Amino acid sequence: MTAAYRAEGVTYRAPSGAALVDDVTLEAPAGHLLALLGPNGAGKSTLLSLMSGDLRASAGEVTLSGRGVREWPAAELARRRAVLTQANQMAFAFRVRDVVEMGRHPWRGLATEEADVHAVETAIDETDIRHLLERAFPSLSGGEKARVSLARVLAQETPVMLLDEPTAALDLRHQEEVMRMAREKARRGGAVVIVVHDLTLAAAYADSIAIMSRARLAAHGAPRDVLTPALVRDVYGIDVHIVDGPDGSPLVVPVRA
Amino acid sequence: MTAVARLRGWIGGTPHWVTFVTLAAVLAVAAVTSAAVGQLGVGITDVIGALGRGIGVDNAWAPADEIVYQALWQIRFPRVAMSILVGTALALGGAAMQAIFGNPLAEPGVVGVSSGAALGAAAVIVTGASVGVVGTAGAAFAGGVATTVLVYAMARSQGRTEVVTLLLTGIAVQAFAAAGLAFAVFSSDTSAREQIIFWQLGSLNGARWAEVALVAGLTVAGLACLLMWARQYDLLALGERTAGHLGVRVERLRALSIIVIAVLTAGAVAFAGVIAFVGLIVPHLMRLLLGPSHRGLLVASALGGAVLLCLADIAARTLVTGADLPIGMLTSLIGGPFFFYLLRRARRSQGGWA
Image 1 (cartoon, rainbow over the protein chains, first blue to last red):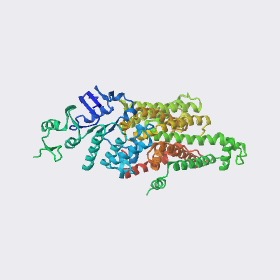
Image 2 (tube, rainbow over the protein chains, first blue to last red; image 1 turned 60 degrees about the vertical axis):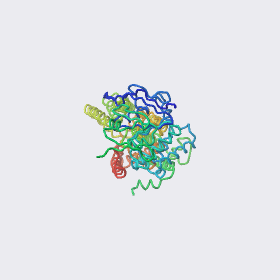
Image 3 (tube, rainbow over the protein chains, first blue to last red; image 1 turned 30 degrees about the vertical axis):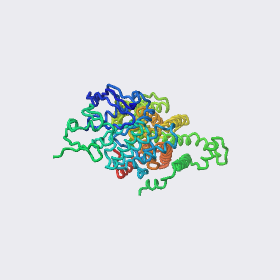
């Protein structure tokens, strides 16, 4: 396995001096779906920002295909990794189709028109947004916006995808579809890092999960090995049962009095 | 159904060039009309004939009277050309400003171009350092560009610019410029005071070909730059982080754009005085007609700004017989209520513009 992404002892200190990510070493290999979990404020989004190249690590290094992520030229980086952020903002009333097509920007002048059309149409189908194409983006619901943004990220056709809570605003069916799509993308050789909050969902789809707690990496490995009641209590401060689901993947159920 | 919505329904689906051609046609009619109206009555055909003869096409419509011909070419035409260029430059500056900050409330005036230019002009008028009109214009241009760059530089922090910080910095710097202006007015004699006041009111009176050529050069260069960046402006609507993820070097694009915006706006303000609201209203209106995509929006704004100022200049010379009203006063008179209408409308349809 080639390591698409590698974070080596990465630390990020906010201007106030507090370490938001503290000495994290993590790999996101090609063909692999990595779920990043952890309580609110544990540093997941910051780690993702370090991996995407938005933030400069205070210590350690993030490499993409062996090269420092911030050393890649902006346009080339945009053809290698796509990022879905939590904010689905849009300043002006662009149509949904325009938004998805924006994902093709890094390929301008490099891809054929057929390739552009194919990428956009595939992304539209994979995220189930064909009925929204003529709508203005700001008029969509939260979940619809999330799916359109995801379609934009897919249209970018990068070997690496960093998705920050793509399932947060989605209904049950679309949550499952997004996770299935992410796993499918990994099966075809992509490296996908996905931040989710639902432990059961992560356990069902991810090849490995990494759990962050107070800026540090608390555990990293196959879902079945990592998810234990002791770890969950330690990280989230809540008692859980972990039982086998009907399909064999673990279900994490809080202990309810 | 509002008039704008009806208009949009009518245009909806038609390619952008229909709008461009319509605007260009309106502009041509407005320009010829503008050259025809004034104290010296000139027919529409005289204007067209004089234009033809001026560019080397001798024709029957050309005015027989040499004085009419000279009046058109020496006084009317440069003024019409200046109104078109100033309108174009102001509208482009506004469209680009809204694009780089992803905020429809952004306008070059907000970051202090006008105040800086006014201060620059006043300083030259008071100290008597000016050598004719060009001295005042040069100082106004320098003041406008300097203020914009100053506001932008002060609003930046750790390589990023926040819109709210920028707007608030603009307010602070404008207050400072207003104090300087107040001092200039206070300490000057009556004639200089009058000059400062009238400069601020804005006028296209006395535009000369040399000045027109200068503003034309700045405007065309500015338009070329902005069109080149139009696609990146579209991506900026996704937010600066996401635009960055798509390969846009956001801060570099913003810094370069700010320079272009400052030059466009300060160039216009330097020769025409403070003309408010064009940069705010025109891009808005064009966005309602064409949607937010910046390639079409920039071209339409350039044309729309030209039309608006050309019409405003006609109004300035005809509303009160024998008087040349300040054009900045007119655009604000129309722009204020129109902006209010836009705000109400945006609030109704999309819950405001936070």
